[in-house]
Image (tube, rainbow, N blue to C red; front, side, top):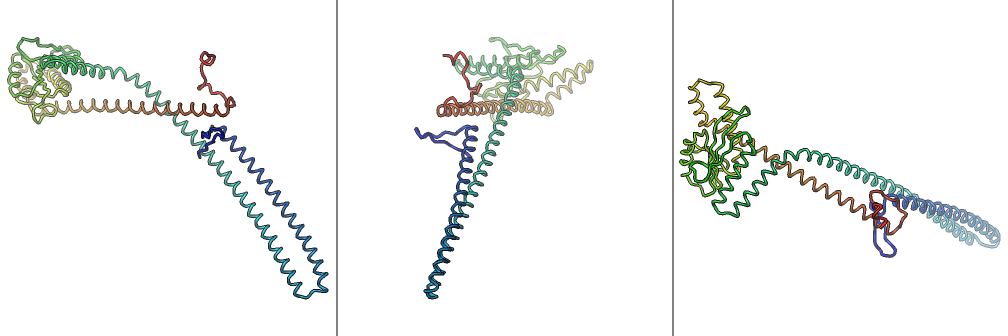
Length: 397
C-alpha cells in the first residue's frame, strides 16, 4: 500500500520513509482509539440521560394521567398512551442508532487494524526485495571475479578480432593488390596464432608458387606434412584449381587449400573439389585445424609402420577418400559450433551485467533522492546514513 504526503505549502507529494510511516500509523491508531473511547462515553452518557428523561416523562405522564383520569374520558387516556408509545419508540430508535454508531466505530477500528497488517506485510515484502537485490549484487561480484579469470582466454579472441579489424581496415583503404597482401598477412597471423609449433612461410612476391606454406609439426617435433595455401580476393575462377595443383606438385605438399573471398555457387563453408580443398575466408582456420589433425594422425601411423611401403597407397587413398572428407567436415563443424557457443555466452553475460548495473544505479539514485526530499521537509530529524554522508574534507568545505 503506497502512502503519499502532500506539503501544505508547495503541494508536492512525496513518499515517507519506513520509520515515518510507522510513526504516522501509530499516531492515527491512537487518535482513532481516543475518538472511539470518547464516542462510546458520549453514547453511554446520552443513553443514561435518555433513560432518566424517559423515567421523568413517564412519571409526569402517569401523574397527569392519574389527575386527568378522574375527569377525562377513556378517549383521552388512549391518546396519552399512544403518545407514550410513540415516545418509547423514538427512544428505542435513538438507542438503535447509538448501537449502529458503535458498530460502525468497531468496523472502522477493524479496518484500521487490517490496514496496519497489510502495511507490515508490504514492508516485509520490500525487505525481501532488498535482500534479493543484495544477493544479486553478491552474485554479480562473483561473476566479475570469474570474468577476471576468463580474461586470459578472451585475450586470444580479442587479439584475433583486432587483427581481423586491422586487416579489414587496410583492405578497404588499399588497392586490389594491397587487399590481397593484407589477406595473406591475416591468414599468416591466424595460422601462427592457432598453430605456434608449425612453420608458416610466406612465398615472396615474384617467386613462383602458392601464397603461404604451412609445415605441420607435431608435439614431438616431427615433420608431418605440408599444407599449401592459395588466397584469392577476386571473383571466382575455375582456372585457379589447375594452377594450385601444379604448385602443390612442385612443392611436394600433401594438401592444397584454396581460400576465396567470393565462393563459387553452392559453397557455404568448404568442399573437396578436383583434388584441392576450396574454403571460404571465415572457415579457413577451422579447416586448417581439421586438416592438420589428420596429417599428424597419418604421420603417426606412418611412423608406426616404417618399411611398409605398401601402406603408402592406402594412405593416399584415405586422404583422397570420401571418409576423409566427412571426417574433416565433422571436425570443422564441431569447432565452429564451439566458437559460436563461446561468443553467444560472452554476449549474453555482457548484456546481463550491463542491465544489473543500471538497475542498481537506479535504486541508489532513488534512495538518495528520497532522503534529500525528506531532509528538505523534516530537517535534521532524520538519523544520518554513513553511506550517503559526504567525506570530511568535502563536508567541511
